[in-house]
Length: 567
Image 1: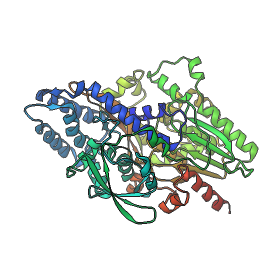
Image 2: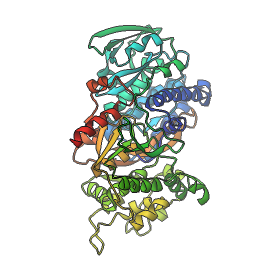
Image 3: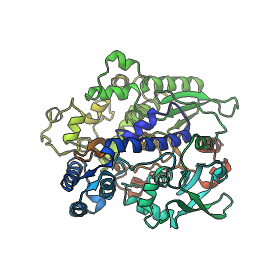
Image 4: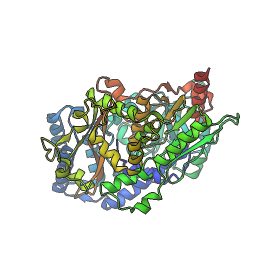
């Protein structure tokens, strides 16, 4: 969960502080951009010789087996993995394949790993003037897709309608079929991708619904807000336009927007009641100082100390935040991470340190890992290519049993027996501390303990959606275990999942993607919570409708919950 994907990076670097639904729109534009650039990079979808296709398939299987901690269990085991590999190899025709055909062949093979981070970046071609699928943009409430925008102005009356089926195929079946094409960790990921990508693009819709014959039009069913079911037929020759953005709706409240650092803290009075609350918004976790300090320490970036000092610091921001909240006696902190798709994980521990204290931070990790959970990295060729300042020799210093290439490092888990200093304080795992030490601005504060647990409001509410994933989910979990209250819709990522991503590129086709190299087991004894992190106050369709499908409905709901908690 610790590292961003390329798609996430593009999304967030084009945001410039837009609100949630504009992020959805930019997500779609990003997918179109990737589609257009993918075709250029893939040599205009040229025909590949059979032997080159086979070499690429074997290269991909080798990358996955030598990098991923466990590419077997979700798909049925090692024998099943290799059987699936040979079925894929045998499906290559004597005449060869185009790159698009190869992507289509590889997607089920990669999906069988069951890891949404182990995926193919290269996408099918899309024409922005006619995307070819369902001409609506959907979001998720409960386990339904509902309309948030229409491609045509006359269809804007369908905002709030829930999707029942496409070409006679129900949403449950669409989710099942999607899981055979992309790595799915829970249904929220499938719904997110269906509603804001796969059902909108004709190539992907046809892949999901092979029985769809006349692709010049598409038939689907909505359940309207009043409960009535309506059948619709629309032309597939409709494209995204700026009109779609206007349909995305305007919120009834004006929340602060982040700048190029993608995080901020402000005191706000959303209803002009005369009472301010704390509002921390984190849209992305890759452009703050401590993230860059960690990247520099690993050899991934080359910033000088003066350049690093120009980046806004999470440590400094959160220190000022708790000082000011204590001075004001603020009893509410809203942590808005609805749009947080990842970046660098360290912001979560920094926040917990200031709100709940160093000991709480240590206890959370030691407790989880000593019960069979925790995090482990697999040391592989891609790991050391991406972290040039690290080596096995350095990692093995002080170990009684040295690790070799391909090993999984269980140091954080095996070393997390309870250990205390002379004053009775629990001591953190030295391997985990090395990560903190790389974030030098934070580590100076962490060592001093001057502001450890300095101030925590009575009510800490975390706003989340299925877009809250990767390191965004890490931050959610940190706050969840510390005692914060979660509001919204569950993350599209499973707490028991994979992370620390590395990119790959196939030699002959140029197809690109990513693969995980670490595991995170957060709930070792609770598979269901390990699959879907439960939300304390989930958003219901009825509640969403009562807010008029406001794009900031989760925030409005949090304000209602806060009023109840205070009573």
